[in-house]
Image: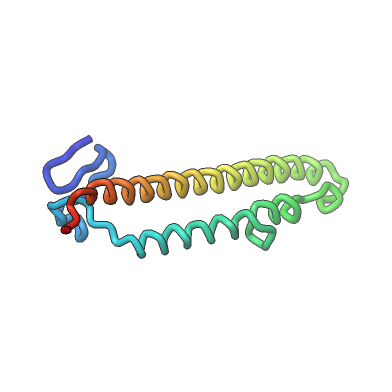
Amino acid sequence: MQDSGGGGGYSIFYIDGSWPGDEDKDGVDVHHPSVKNLLKALEDDIEQLRGYKAGTAQHFKTHGTVAPAHMGEWDAAMQLHGVFSQAHTGLTTSYDKLVAQYEAALAVARAAFTNLGSAEQASDVGTAET
């Protein structure tokens, strides 16, 4: 990890220290309502991906297959059906993995937000004016 002051990053991905929003020198400045709205939008996206509407994995698994009867009975068509079948399997597997990674990323983001809130509350203990 590299850090030349003001912005951290990996050797492949570097955040410029002059990037807007990176200027808070007193700690992390989180706008909680915006983060909550973002998490809710991501949850809504995942719910749509889990559904059965067009464009979802379940819809594609059911309606995206090409049956041998669609191809015909000649040799080349039968071989082409095998290619289509493999492609369908690859696409549905990749789509399922995408949704699983999306869910995992959301779970991590939600946990980080919860932990940040807990840390903020813990740092406020004993600092309230009486």
